[in-house]
Length: 154
Image (cartoon, rainbow, N blue to C red; front, side, top):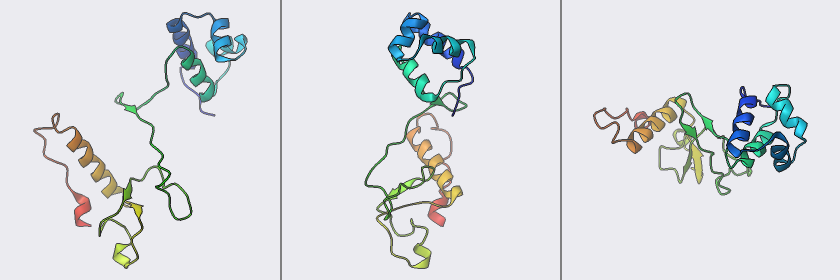
């Protein structure tokens, strides 16, 4: 179970935002009113699902932010991007649809190129992500030199 460090204060803030008593919030979130009281007192650590329901009652949503305060968006799950056994590709890897020659890690072994693949080399993946972020935010980085293109040389 994952818990929130500040769930008592989150629940109180949600309750204030929605202008609801503990009983009203509990009824709308479909939990016992004592559960809300225990969460606010710090005696119960709620599940993410319960926090999501409680926060949803006030018309709010949970968000994951990085250390800079940027919201991480959920990844889309494409049913047509699975391997031959029907498994999803690892979520930390960037999926390449229709790889070009040299984009698949097994090209150097002469293996047949699959319809989709991913970059296994972390240094190449990180360089590509930096480059992509730089290109998207070019106005903000107008004076900065572009990141190196490591993946072209490998």
